[in-house]
Length: 321
Image (cartoon, rainbow, N blue to C red; front, side, top):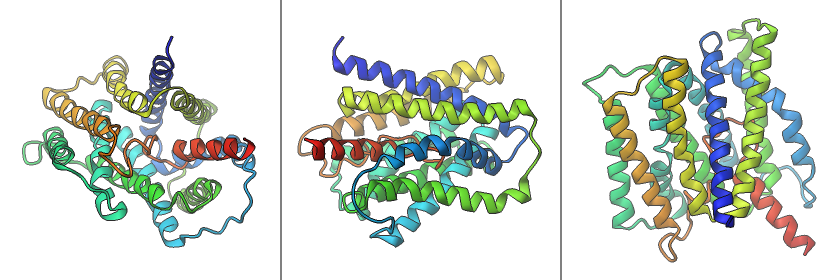
């Protein structure tokens, strides 16, 4: 089996695990606030993430060189996590994914002012078509828009902003700084908010929190393995397989059947996202490759960012060589 095929299969497995992770989030979201779910899931995953962070052998301190960009990314991460978990709790799975899949379009737009990215006519049209797909899913005026729809849009926007900030300051900041601060922000901010929303959890639900932490961590490791075996243009589009799992899980578990508008809009968004990924993968098309280099699902702060873990390992290997 070729390395690209291995990477694709690993990515498909990872995103199947992520989709199952989101099902557990939706289950718990029926009884608990997103703040409580993220806080305890992050707390349970913290030892695993800390072990990875402790392996950083590069010299330096933990003070960010770009404190304001770091602070904005921390805020973006907290908003993304709470918004995404809330959206999964209240919206159909397929509809949530369809809106979150707008992230590559938003990353492309944000990269223009923040990274100086030059977006040509083809990628520009792909962004416009993809945003039209978002409007098809939302159908403003035809269907009532809820707080859940606003949360999914917020998750897509702030996740994209966090990704672009990493591209902007990542070359100058230590990976451990970029990895640690969002996790600490979630722990502190959500910990302060927790007393206002806390509900006691039975052992079964605590176990489900453990499943969220474990599945997120395992899927992250599989994605890292996929990117180390295959080209980014092969691995990145595999995320859209989550829509298949959303349709299956939604139908079998939550009695959800995506309507025609959701499926049409999702198809338009996915096609636009794949086109942008393929265009970025071509030589001399994109200087920064902001979508291809993001390599992560929307950030929740419960696990380290995949692109940073990959970069840190590459740096360590160069230093050892």
